[in-house]
Length: 534
Image (cartoon, rainbow, N blue to C red; front, side, top):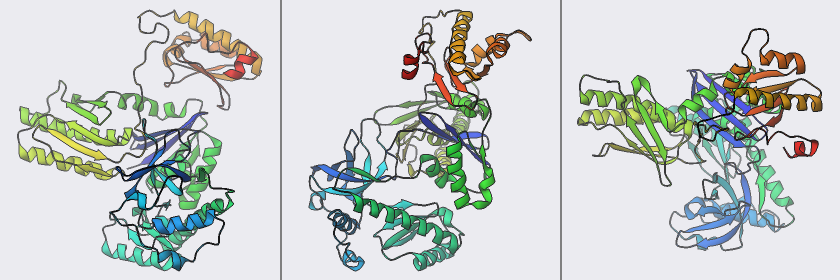
């Protein structure tokens, strides 16, 4: 299996697409100004203690207070909290031996015995804000690397259960025990299998340095206050850290700064693979060039087709996701039972793909086509379970109920990826009549004249493929060629734009203006003041 990572950097967001064997498997979008990334460490303030929930709400600077449950304090909470409070009081840090003499937090207890309103506490984002809920927190601080996870004030070395070889598990455990500094716990990740001591030791020193930087920032705080203490590495690097493997053939990036960050990280973790990081300089939008936009629009709608004519209906409610399996018009077998079984097996492949692609979390109810045979029901359950073994998110699959429903739970860390794949005509607003295309091209020409006069350099103009096809009519005297000869403007198509939407960039790809999809006359700047607002 070959893997590729496509990174599309835009002024307001970064989108990353993971492609396996030319099939889009995961897509992540993040706003560039977003700060609530999983792994960020904050000094928060307890706002409210909720004994009934055995939890507290903590202010970490988000509009909704974050949630911290008793079970997320961690066994070593007394050690971490005592150390942090000592630093905040500007006192000398207590000796490691004294910290380890403090009692561990048991699995049964009341959070009110450890925290009260107004307390400052060091916490880490475990789940990003989803819908109307604030972030989910943990007080068990951890620093994740590619091969290991470092836990300050822990004392255990644990090895991933996905490493099946007992001899390798024993080797890794002994190796890490011999190199880890005193006062740290370590979780050895699956990708560490077969790694040498030098690689693990180098990464451990890097993570220890990150924790020491966090401690320094705490010491520098003039007074306890809600504060971002340690920012997790960028989402691009975080995703790369978790998914990178030797099957990667290329990492394509369309932004020089992100390209340099990715190159530096790949050189650090796999020097022999640095050459696979490539700077994309094509004129066509990077997601269009690699067929990502097309796959997103066909794979993220309410209705999703799969092999042999079947299709899924994917819908989200407040409490859960529902997926309905339909056979379509084609038959998959000689009788009803065989047809249902074959369709369900094909549907299971697409459902496993959809869970990863949309990053669906929480409760998922799948309504398969009814089957009478218990053997077929068991085979379908085992098939779905095997398919989800490739999923990095924690999950649980239950057998089919007597109503033909399968229940799946999947770890929810961030909001699911959603995309509107249907477009309302931006000119007629669904009435069925639109202005002639020639009037739209006249409007575009006015914008081209204004922008070339203002910027005095060649520009690129991206339009919907239908508009591009209209402007490209004629071999020698098309509108596209007229604009190129007269204004030096290169007309290009973008699948990501709505029908009457357009986008100006300079020749390096820097975005100058994107019109709103609903109108076009009102959005283009007509003077310098309005241009600044745009």
